[in-house]
Length: 356
Image 1 (cartoon, rainbow, N blue to C red):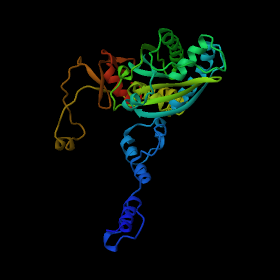
Image 2: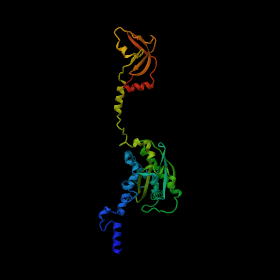
Image 3: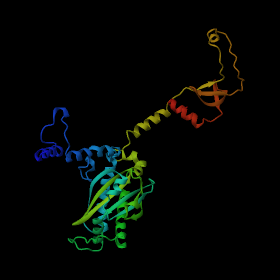
Image 4: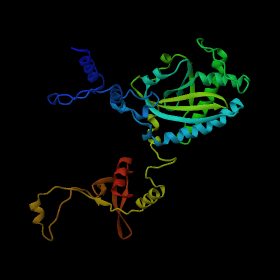
């Protein structure tokens, strides 16, 4: 084979260009690298997880999107406002907190994506009986330490790579995390009372496993800027933590009642209690053939299996209410009730539409 022929063949396999394929080959075209990346979904950056395509989009389609919980975004917007005020008081500096992104991610993928070194705080949601994570990156750690210890403005925070965080750095960051957790409690307060208690501080993601790797979680990425320095803080809440308050997070706005109208409920209740029902006093019941009932004539007598002092049954429809004794009050027949109505019978009567 000549050099020109070999070059032409290589050109056909690498780019799909060159001489047209024979008619018998079906005109197959070789995908280039960009098209393969787009098909597999690996052409995008890791941060742009919301616009994944291809095979990665199919794999991650089982994740529940936070947009199905509209109230979450309102809660986290409230958290941003609270943190802006509390961190200003905490650092005595001009602090700006912004909400970068709210995404859904698998818990195992999140642990693998944490940039090290970092401080990971494990907290417990007492009323929800589950855990969450607060991750503080190294830029924010050094910035907070620099601000709290009186570092000069305009100077870049000094970073020493390859060493663990000192006790002073851990204590100062822990105080900031406690402030953030207190703000999170206030942010959830309009929905439900939740106390976020700091459980422990970790620097290794493997020791911060609070859920199974395939489990879905919500990650809130916050940007904290203190003039010319700052960093990122991430709040992770597994869906298992939010499950007890899922109905509240489905609301479109605070105090939504999902179609319930208290005025209409009160009016309906008052009308039900004022409804009149027919109550029958049954002396006795017997079964007779239909033929005998059709042959009854005026003057025929039916013998009841009841003595004059036998109790009578009080019925509302087919529901037995109580028992009583037949007597007379003035010129009218009366029944004296001798047995209270049990709750089960009362509920059955209320289903009929009123009060006995």
